[in-house]
Each structure stands twice: as C-alpha cells, then as structure tokens.
Image 1 (cartoon, helix red, strand yellow):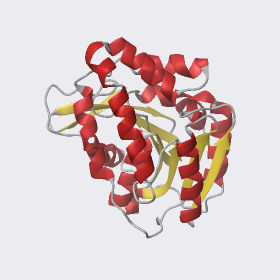
Image 2 (tube, helix red, strand yellow; image 1 turned 135 degrees about the vertical axis):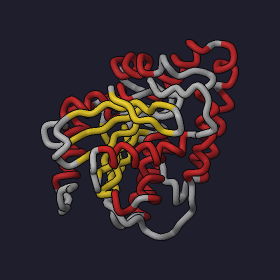
Image 3 (cartoon, rainbow, N blue to C red; image 1 turned 90 degrees about the vertical axis):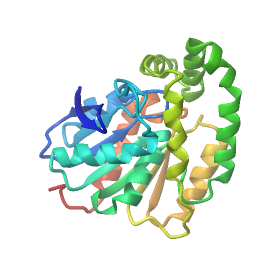
Length: 266
C-alpha cells in the first residue's frame, strides 16, 4: 500500500502493473475497501496499470478528524493521477464506487477515457426509485449499526453478495468500517446532478443476474437512455459481480476496453 497526503490526512491506495501502460482507477463499494477489487488488480495488470484506493472511513484511510466527506474522493483520484503524471484513465467502480467514478468523469472529462459501473446507478438520469430504495435500506440497518457493529458488517456483506466466497471476501474487507465512517458517506448526495444530455464517454454497465430487480431494471433503462452505453448481465452473481464471477467479469471488461478506439494515456 502507498499513500498521498490530502488535507493533513493520508489516503491509502494499492497499485498493480506498469505505470507506463493505460491506467484503470478501481473504486470499491461502500463498507468494503480495495480488497474487493483484488481479482481485477491481479489479472488486468498484464495490460493495464491499476490504482485502487481506500475511500474515507474505509480500509486504511481513517482520518483522525476532517470535515471532508466521500465526494472528496474525486480529488483524491486526481491527486494520485497527478503524482504519476497520468493524463487520462479508465474508471471502474462498484456500487458507491460507480457513483464516484461518474462524479469524477463529470468534473474531469479531460481525464476520462471510459466509465464502468458495477451494480450501480446513474447520478444524472432516472434514479429516483433507486435512491428511495437506498434510503429505505439505510433505515433498515440503523439498529445494527448502533448496537451491533459485527452484525452490521455481516448483514451488509450478505446483502452485497450472492456467492459464499464473495461473502467472505466482502466481510473481511469491511472490518475497518466503523460507526464514525458513516459520517463520511453523507457527502454522497453532492455527486448527483440531473441532466438529460448524453454522457460524453463510453459507458459500460455490469450487473449480476441476482442483483436487486430494481437495480437490473434501472440498468436496462439506463443503457437505453445513453447512446454511448452497453450493458452486460453476469450469471450467478449478485451486487458485486466483479467479486462473485471474477473470471467472467474480467473477460467482458477487457473486451469492452479492447473495443475502444482510444489513444494511450500519455
């Protein structure tokens, strides 16, 4: 693990591959950390340089005190890219990570080669029903969060995965998430900006066939709304398809990247 300092706290991240190759920034789901993306860092690094950071309150990124919230991850990404003098990148995010990826692409389109969303939803379009469902879900686990942190982590891991092996990995990645970490998630709302305009970047949407029906429905509708989008549904996978079926996910993701007619990142 490496780190950069931002606003007097350290942001930790992991890299894999050669920095001279095209870059992929990988963003983990809420409550987990960079470990949820290890199957991508281990496999895709032959052709790409991968960066996977721990967002505020997740993994090793644990400020003692800061007013920053999760939306500042956009600036953390920019700082890491600048440190390596990387001018463009692909962004791949899982669930919450996919919202950050879209937020980065909105603020820094000049850096963005493509955005891949795993189990997430649009920050721009047709997202009201999913946001309401998410708020109901948050209310349902408040008791566990306050009185049983280990129970909360197990509940989140169960809700986020379909395969037993993925459940174990997710639970391990959630060990550093604490009650204090919830405060940082309040910045999620700052990422949303309604827009009817098509996104200017290639967009790849990936869902597990056992994700929530409302998520699958949104994904299919989203793919119809964006002329630059394509969608893939991965069998025998839940919300975190990259963890549940890593071989299949890596295959379809590499195919998506290889089909893009883009220059290198330098």
